[in-house]
Length: 195
Length: 193
Image (cartoon, rainbow over all chains, first blue to last red; front, top):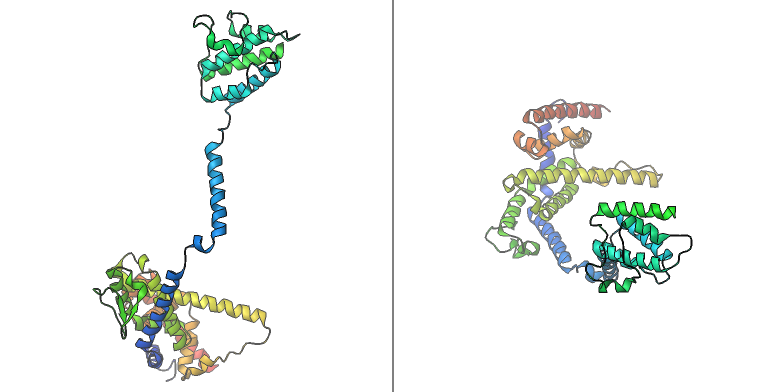
């Protein structure tokens, strides 16, 4: 059959299939397929889980994941601008205090984190009294604080004594919201610069 | 001959053999695979259209059914299993050809010796016409070749081809006409040369 003359491509394909079909045996085909599927199934069944085959990297990865989880769980939240201001102020007070560290930075951070503004106010008062007791040379920090508070405060109070204060004995700073504190700190720092 | 009954707990093959991997699958899947296997000859023909010879075609068909067995869970519409199977067949053949082409490229680059065009497989082909036809089919553009092989080798209906290729029936027909014309021209040219 000459191609193009008879033009019967279909017939040529049929011939090719006929010839190829002679070598194709369904039974043999199925047997081969079966063997392949069985081998693959056995391989799959025999394959142990990854963590059993490679324990070292899995343990290392687990420890790493645990460390990261622990770090995320226990890490301190990043300080807000407000907290940063508090810390700055705390540092300034600690340095300018009477040597007894009237206001520990950690205490401030702890108080602010818990948003216990009133307690923090008390702590400030403690620092204020400590400053009043201590001669600070040219720096009239106590006066600056006084100007900020605009309140009369009783004399000579140490930070440790604040629990024993009578309820009406001391004016608490009127600082209840973030905004009030922020304003307060700005003014305070300004005053601190001035003195 | 694989005999797969939907009610059987495991697939039994030939004389008491069984596909262990399928024993754990559902009855529906086994029945489905049985239906897929009923098309083994059609798949073999389609593979023959893409392959150089019957040996390669059988290897490809094996690959097709192995893939079908492995991926049977991805068959979303079981009633269209034929369409799915033939698509797997076509993709497997195309992948295999790509790999072959890459291998040839690599061989051509790694060894500077000229490649012998007369492979033993080519010698198996008895008729010149068949050899020419094979060459002409291989030379067809991919789209035309797909339609041609599914029609002439797989003996699929126009509608089935349209479903497998994801085109309209009219497009199938025009691709088939184009393919036949190109094959005739190519074969003429080859027989003259």
